[in-house]
Length: 216
Image (cartoon, rainbow, N blue to C red; front, top):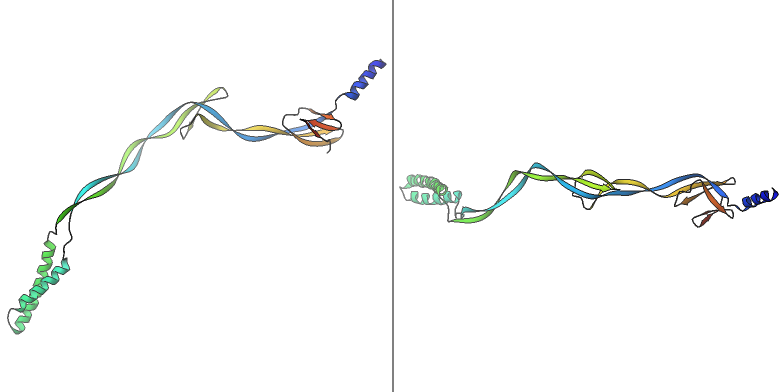
């Protein structure tokens, strides 16, 4: 019994001590979730739209006249006045001159107004108009995808490539660990879940090659 008791005491003396894990909080970061596109079908709708249509047309024009309405009146008044001045004598000549000027101005204006213009010519002009017409438009795509071995479907606005974004999820990148050992507590960051306890070697927490002193 003594030998057995001594063996147990020696085992306890040389066994690895452990610190208690009080808590292990996951450290996370967002990562996108993608699905592999299996098929995609365009969704179309008939809509009314406008577009501009331009054509070139030959337009007939007339070159500008040398005189306008006012010039015709002036020339007519001068000519009429000269002709009237040659008629009669004294006051009669004055009246004839005035009458000739008035009549000549009126005649000159009417001639200009009724005149058909100068030489005709043609020009090519661009004529544009807005046309309203129905047309078929793509408004989205029905996509079938495979993610983690399962098929799914969704609707997207744009034509997908080889993959389609499904959303985001939290990815665990480490753990904030709080431990307790012989009445002392401390914290450390670990890459993996520590479980319920952490090994202590030579009075320090031994984790992933880094020794953390058991100090609170």
